[in-house]
Image (cartoon, rainbow, N blue to C red; front, side, top):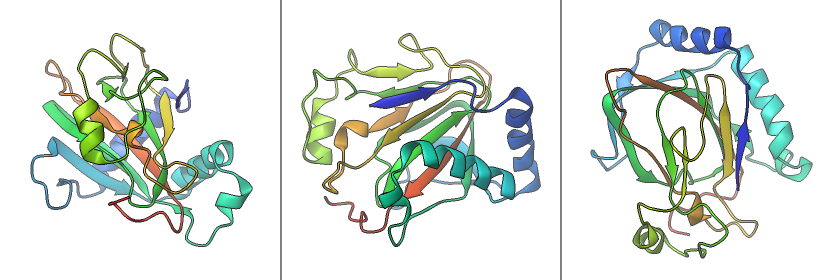
Length: 200
């Protein structure tokens, strides 16, 4: 399931988050050990009271009391990403302890592709199996022809199954940014102690 949250942030809040990157030191970043996963993207981490309050509010919507009180549970600082034209993040899984992802669209541009979303698609058991199932003509594209998004909207999705195994249907990609505009997004990752093995 992918939950579309309309109007989570106001336009003023989106502007403030994008402007806050100028006060940090963005750096080119890639998935550890893989220099080709994320391209033409600057990233910054933001830690302040406002973003923590936002995380707490949304965490209360999606996380049970049991999860919230489990040792090792918490939320990472807000990650803000600025994708230049042509920038992308290839198919990946957010796991390694990240139980829940909330992705905010700060300027309403760009597409996030979930190729294995949908009840008709079987559940893969491994990353390789998941990638072998990907076909370009199925799945949900958020921000594209399937689902439109606006500034301030967000999507939320779980990266693990109830038994602690990776939910490989949640693999997704930030599709290449079209045109000359930048794509601005932000992530909150909610961690759950005990879900940590990337090989599961």
